[in-house]
Image (cartoon, rainbow, N blue to C red; front, top):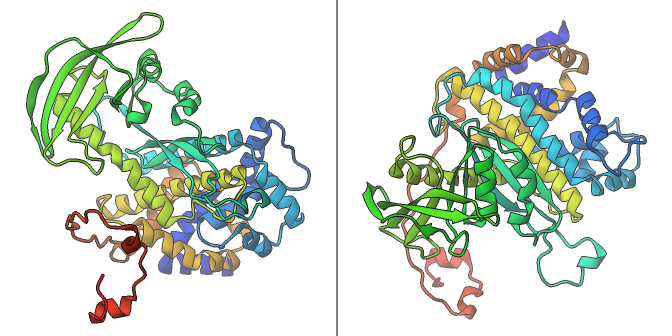
Length: 456
């Protein structure tokens, strides 16, 4: 009975950590994680340290509940192996296992999200939108002996990320240990999972004949920015002006590309002539698409491509809200595991955000994921001490619909005013121009600059 009283106190005073625990339990069930490891491992094996324990510890770091893997391990009472054995396991976790972790945890959370977002608006009518982009992990500390003599940054790896923006979920992740590998060379596993009815948004790094034909062969659609060199389509019609949008004038032209087997594919080239150049100095953006004009007009295609930047916002939230890049982990496989677990934690946060928005009828732009994560970090540890494990087991048998209703009930006790965003006004654009190196590297005293004693 005392446990029920403690649980009720958290419901009324701090419901978000309860929501996080229930979703982590669904996304990271120990039995499921260990089964996933046994199914997809290639050379690794289990002795005393279970894969579920490894992921649980890394999740504490990703959520910001512990500053490092070492600190997470020290705080764990159930760890039965040495610190060296833990690090050996982490350093050798195979990228294939990390990918399956992200894919499958997302699949376990999506049905719950579907019960929360019953009226989910579509980005493109009749399509399931997927946004594709690459992400290079930040440079790690040079703790490994072979790195200590290097002057340049040590990059532990990269990943291709597939984001479903309508659900705010990462649905696929292709980890790569070589940070300098070409992103296009990593596309094989992604293309295998392309399904009919999907619409893929991507930048010009993925503008190749092979990729475009592969998506077309899967009866899927794409809106991909045209590279200056590839796929070098041939013009099949005149360039026609369509109209004006917020950022410039839109034109459309029929073009064709041909693969190595001689197959020809007719596409639409949507060209946006910008009123103001991009940061790279581009005054024109060309987009290739196989979406028929009767399903999506040229201005709609241009607007849809602009929304590709939603994945950059997701990366930003992943970096600022969660600890997605652990700089103390220099081994590529360890860094990729940390990133994969952080992505999984992001998906948990996305479901929590959806529950709050749905229950209080708020727009996605009104609620701050930072404040949600901050409350979880503040009270999660104390909650886990106060509420014993047997009570949590009572929620394991819930269906997706029951868990969705439980999350909405908990969200009803959240005070939205504490979670609202406080957006800054637009930044004033100023061209700084060229500055000599000695000026760029010059140190200044902030106090003196504010007093006016020292000029910037």
